[in-house]
Length: 227
Image (cartoon, rainbow, N blue to C red; front, side, top):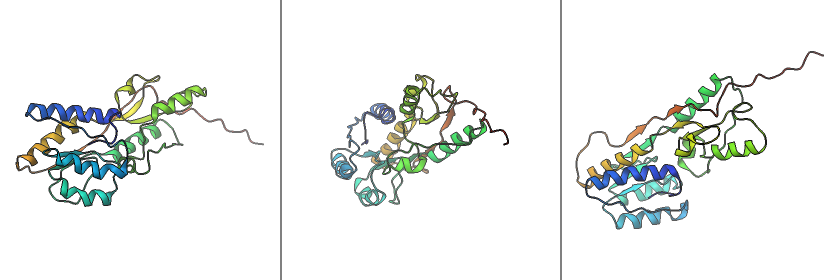
């Protein structure tokens, strides 16, 4: 179950999961919650009752709701969410470290004023990284207003979706190995379905910096002459 099939990040996760499951003779059914947090728990329950197990990407579901529903969805694997319920693996991208790496990189270029474009307030991933997938829209708006990127302002993004390397200029980003969690999610779910023991369920993925043309040294500021 994913919140938005149009999002390239979830498409990549699903591709990796579907391929891995197919190798074991399983088929993946996809449920899209269309970002409707009020319906996410109901949809997750319906999807679980029709399948052997559930991989859940639900960034908008509240922590309280997730804790309440998680035990009834077993076998369950979570992506970018965690729960206190026992026996539920979580695959998490270290968004906080990714944003910290981006900030340190920009400061190293001499930038002293950093603006942040927040994602949806109810998104769990947004709470971890304080970053929306909005960088390309920002660059388009800056271009329309005659602002030079990176001459006047540097722009960075997160997730390194496929379009990031084809923008003008190409987008500096924290690259997340978005295909890997899908395959790992299936391996975790397969172990739960088959009741196979594994020592360290879940996993944590570290983003890496992909430095491209949308970022550059800060432009020196002019200071007024005395008097």
